Length: 179
Image 1: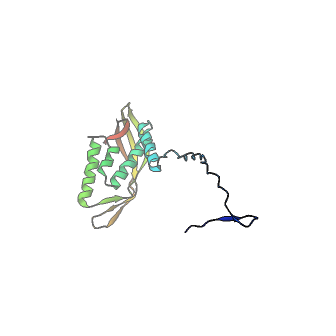
Image 2: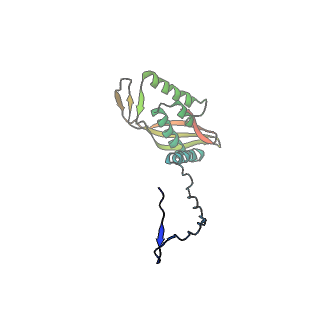
Image 3: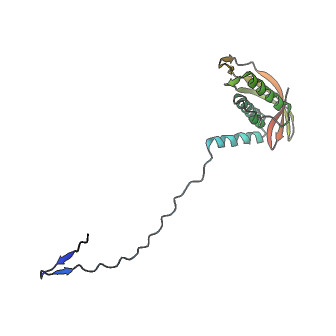
């Protein structure tokens, strides 16, 4: 359908509509790209980096506490690969922890709520890549879950004094031996 527009003027005769001026292109400035904030490390990434900084440091109490926390998580998660963040490769400590995980798996058991409270750390020997400390640690109350789903609560232990030999692995402290 075509519609013609006529404009009447005084003489009564129709007259065509006045010409429409040509459309001129208008320059439109592109909007500035939105400023996207730089990626922010996730909280878990920041925690992991802070823990790694502790293990690169020289505070024996902080180092032993971080290693104890990592060991508890590895045992609760039944994750042998996580033990690499605790024990030195090929060490007696690694072999003992891997054996503990094998025994748990064979029995169909797992830990829940396991934690270690480091009460004190005393340096006995110190070197750039080797540190021997005496640590007093308390194992927190936790549960051992059996294959049938039953849970046995294990009371918190008495403070236990252990001799720990720590060695640097790729710049971070790891447990080499426990005595």
